[in-house]
Image (tube, rainbow, N blue to C red; front, top):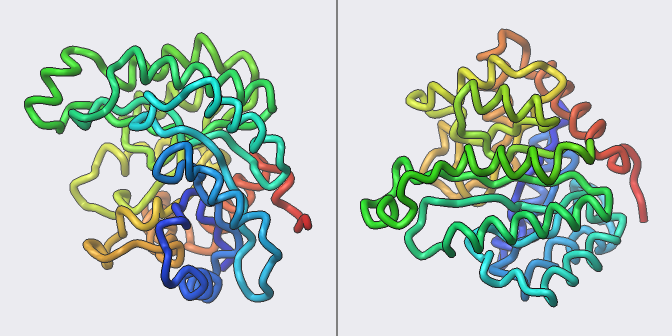
Length: 284
């Protein structure tokens, strides 16, 4: 059952990366999109380094993204943005991200700083003709201090507004990573040309709005991911996540949509290749 993990942070596996990749291959994961945000701009190139390394027989193909996470938006300087543009030119870099807005953590940069970093990176993505990978986290469940900092601001509303103003007209699409919104957010994201990627939290019984969105989305716009090493799916919740576990999320997605796991794997794999056509064949 071929699967693609559309979002994994491979640079977090510092001691057992090859073993993690071997388990992924054994679970049917043939391709992984390694997210290139690092711990900030100084290390965001590590994912691309993995993707450019000589392919190892028996391990998944690795492609990379490059971007500045909203938590690091204050580091979106002229120099780091130029670094993104340079790295994005590499054919193994297939997307810009994860980028977006995060109104959850008190220590995150202020809203204007986050929004400007997001806009700047959308411009680079448009110039380099790369889809974008979106991170969006609201302050709904944040600490009282964070809620006070962000006030009435709604990350989803701000995000979709900025996308409409700065992105949709380029018709390059992208991925709503770890989709955690409502059916209305799903509808508006789809209308803006995005795919919805579902992570391990889809398997959590209390995540009904996410599950509703997974049923609502058209078959040609759904993906699966791990967000590894975070958000391990049931029955592995609480453990360190890894790309092999995407199979559990795909099985839940299949059950919710009333299809077989094989069909879910086939659909999500084809959707990924359609969004990123260069991943259909191995490149040196």
